[in-house]
Image 1 (cartoon, rainbow, N blue to C red):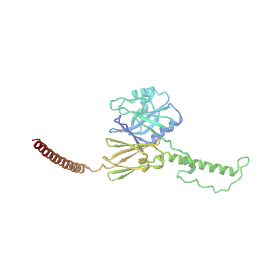
Image 2 (image 1 turned 60 degrees about the vertical axis):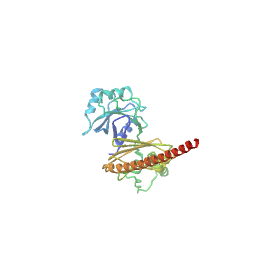
Image 3 (image 1 turned 180 degrees about the vertical axis):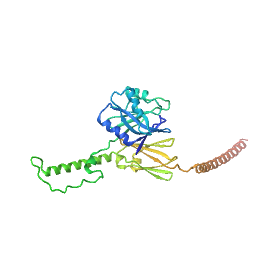
Image 4 (image 1 turned 90 degrees about the horizontal axis):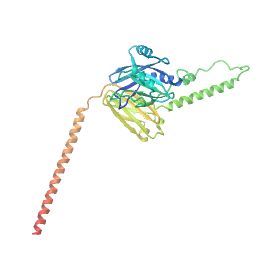
Length: 328
């Protein structure tokens, strides 16, 4: 199961969400507004991992919400609620449901629009939650089924029919059907290409204590800027990317822990990936040696400056003595 991450500096909680579960909410969002449901997951330290989602009946009362919360899949608990709305903001209804049915500090709300814009709402460090604005929005793409339908589940073309073509009395000629099939294939290919072009294709490669993050340069070819975010254990690192940075297609980061989440936002796209592995060896001796070397250089400069100041003072004293003797 693939995951992406959401985090905000204002919130102590990080959210890892299963991409397929969020896409299921996206498919619900494509159907209609006003849908509410329950998110299921588990709490791992300061990280909430969301694994599944289930809709609630229209007009669900407190008893129904309690039953849905208790019906969590094995190994999971109710992690909060999701809502499909016209904007990424919580209404009074969702705020009340979250307050009454999901009161734990780590329980959250996910709000998604019909066009796939989404945002999590979580308690901040002071225990408050702003229902009018998410601390970080992102885009959710709904997986296209047209490509699979046209080209088959293995990605190749459908087997050609071995039967000879025949006329259809009272219907379209075989040539018309053939033309329609070619047009459908071209449309499917075009949609698949558009879909690919809308992805950053964010990748991650481990090279010892360094990780190399890469992306599709064509997807950000005309972007004027980008935003790079790294969650390295408890640390959060952010960096603005220039057009030259984006054109390079990669960035190298020296990690400090064995759990690093990477997020890139540019050209209206937002993708995340994660590295989980062995923590790097301690670099403390190397850092101490570097500091000692730096302090030695600074001390040498201080001594040189002090000697120079003494020489200048001696010169000033000699000049002062000559001036005094000349006046006599």
